[in-house]
Amino acid sequence: MKIRLVSVRRNLIPIVVVSTAFITNLSLTVFNGVGTCVGGICGMYIGNLHYHDFLWHFALAKNAFESIPFILPIYKGATLSGYNYLVDIILFLFDKIRISVFTSYFLVLPIIYLILTAYFGWIYLKRKKNDKLFIATGLFFIFFGSSFSYVLSLYHFHTWRSFMYAQAMQSGRALLNMPYALSLPVMLASMVLLQIKHLSKKHMILLGVFLFMMFGLKFYGGIVLFVLIVSSRAFILIKKGKYGVGEFSIYLAACVVAYFAFYKTNFSSFEIPFTFSPLSIAHPMIEEKDMFYLPSLVLARYTLVANGLFSPRLIAIELFTAGLFLFYNLGSRVLGFLHIVRNLYKRKMTELDIALIITIFISTLITLLFIQRREWWNIIQFMGYALFLMNFFAAEALFYLLKSKNRLSIVAGVVFVLLTLPSNIEQINFARERHVSFTNHELTALEFLKKQPQGTVLALPYQETSYVSAFGEKQQFIADKTQLYLLGIDYEKRLNGVKDIGKLTFDRNHVSYIYYKKNNTIDSSLNLPKGYVSIFQNQEVTIYFRR
Image 1: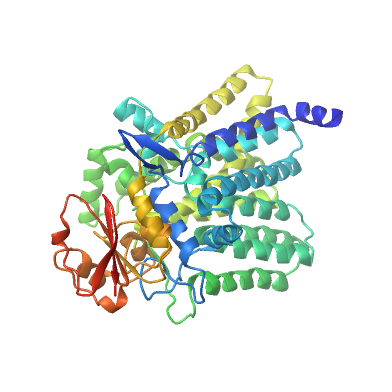
Image 2 (image 1 turned 135 degrees about the vertical axis):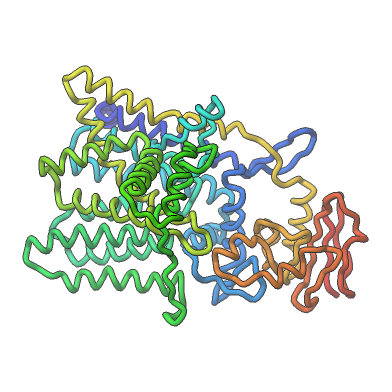
């Protein structure tokens, strides 16, 4: 017991950082799924920040993996492909041992993320510099690194509303995207292995496993980790005069297997998911009124582009826009950029440091030069990983400022800490947020649907989320067109057939149940094909079954 107390005392600052991170991070998740009453209406609360994505993961965990090939729960007749569903398999397995999806998603997985991230982060930082303050600064940025979005909210609204601004994924908000969150300890574990210069075959295979897992969690993360591993190992092997063909074959094989497992069944339909479109991701910085909005620069840029004038002025405008985008997203991590410049100048870089810089540069370059097909903004996810890796350079810079004997340096370090905190303090407010996402009447109807024999469900009016499939544990005829679009499903014809509940056109042989949510309309407005009978009805929902 005495040894433990001494250990805690010696590591007090890092432990305080991790403990605080548990509070701020879990504030985003733990209250989801609880019962609540607002304005006399009672039901279940799910926060708006989780609402769509959680219901999608919920639907997958409950429906997708009961048969092979895996089914797509929101579109009758489609199989699940082109998606990183490793988190959903984990949720499915937890559900099989009677740990509910709600408990797994909002409590178990967040705690696993926090423990593993703290553990691997601690090991990586300790190996780099065995100093408690250095470990604390590293963990601080890993869990609290944030953008300068709160500056815009203070300017436009005179209050903290930074969550409304589009930005790359920040450290304190990782749990808003569970696959991304779980990919971070995988990234850290890989970085710990990459600190070993003489890798054994076991280490190489383990890195291959991490690569496979990363692609199963996030496609973007898989690419980033592949670049990091290859660049790091290449530097070391070149110094040794080796080619590493066998080693790199392991990493390439992991990528190929992951591609077939999660994204495609064959190469015949292979397509590059990104389109060259320089700075499309950055232009809203100066074009949108709730961002920095610089109309004179916008007008000048459009004029120069329209006239085909590739001039120094256009280059200056574009570089300024890119710089603004990076400054905004980096937040207090700009300290890390200055540290990189300093260390490159003094040539104080390890092979892994250089690999990290290359990976950050490539991830940032992809973000700035390309857009993603179907959902162009999704390219920003590369930037999320660049920011995560930048945390370590920012941490080292902060460490030297706080460790300095110069008072001005110490004050500068404290200022950067304070500049990082506003968004993290703001997110604690979400623990107090309450509204009714699903009333008890609707939950009762969904529970009834769940107990019925298997069959396809058509939810009317058409639903923009996967909640009927999730709670009702059945495949839907069509739902959640946003997700269908991202998966490349041609849904337009089917959607047009069910948009107007007064003029429904669908084949009754494809729909066993109709889940009708009353919404200021009357039942007579429904134009159901013959053969459907009501098997459930309450104040909000009527469920029909095809005889």
